[in-house]
Length: 172
Image (cartoon, rainbow, N blue to C red; front, side, top):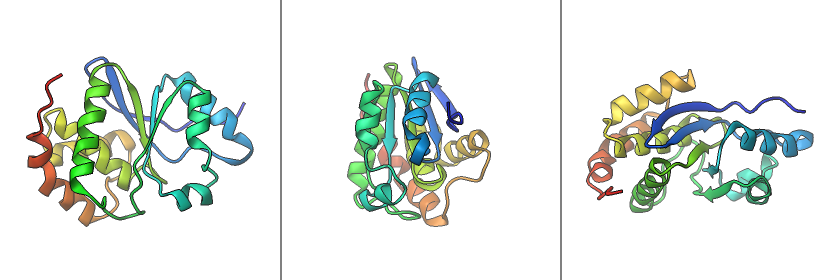
């Protein structure tokens, strides 16, 4: 049995849970890691790693390992310490994940460290839930136990996007 995954619960939403984590452990512990994530109660893993980055850190088979352990897997690549390429796609992802979590999904979002890119997406989901961008980042930082996100650009981008995120029809 490998080490337990570092999953940081952020907020219960409806009947589900939003959590963040650093990238899952790979190498000799990879099978144990994904089994442990599933045992923790996670039903959906969202990876923000780029394809080459996932390969570099030993997670090229993440989709397969998630499925093998009964978890849904979503990939939404964002370059490390950067912003999403398309704000409309990002806003749509926050809406979709919010609805899934509200309906019972136990969702964990990760990038490499679980701070910058994961922090942005978690904040976007929390904005859907009614928090301001500042409140969302404060909650994620408190629960993650480190300042979130990585860069001022990531913080400012979410702040500028919060009206767009909040104004999406989130009828559930």
